[in-house]
Image (cartoon, rainbow, N blue to C red; front, top):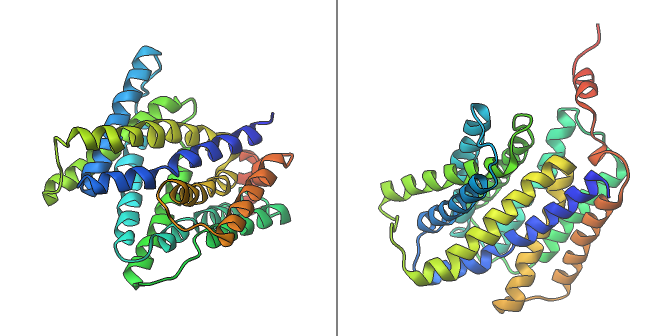
Length: 307
């Protein structure tokens, strides 16, 4: 199995884990938890688990940029993306919010094309369009409410998600991925705890039902496992391919909602899921470098004018 195919599989598996966020998020809301409380405890518990893994496995914690970069990624980029996404949910339908977030694959491809680190190919274009079209079909439903601030917030979450993807790819060489995940979680937990404390919405001692029923599985499945798989997958497959593979997330969220929460699921959702799955399979089976990526030396040469 090539590194690209393995990266696609890891990103798709990560997306399946992230797809459970809606299920556990609804449980947290039903238990009366605020967004900062849920996010702070989710990443705080995940950080504890990852710290135990790092210590028991004697993995390097890193130093310098290998520490402060993932800390900032969690405290600023990850927290901003989550905040914009959850705020957009209060303004526009959940399906539209998810669709706006998953304009991210197109943004990733555009950025790589502008930076000349990606060769444009018909297969890549078809895969991106199929994935985005599949997400659109999956999220098909009546739009009962629409606001420009909500739409802008949803698009802002996609931009923040795009920045996060590239930030993960550009961690220092030989950075330990478990330690990086730990620092991301520490940054996100601290940031949300501060926001919740300032706003007076942070619950420092949530009930057992909230912790065991939603936050703990959210921390383990949707954070420790998914974040780690995604970080490795991006490094193996590259941002553009990983971004398309991650379109499995909204599809899995809709399927989980239909099976476990009674959300509607019909022919458009089935066709959308098939399109996204097809895009991921195509990317995983294609030969060569991920996304037609240029090597670092060739990328620099292509970006610099010849004399």
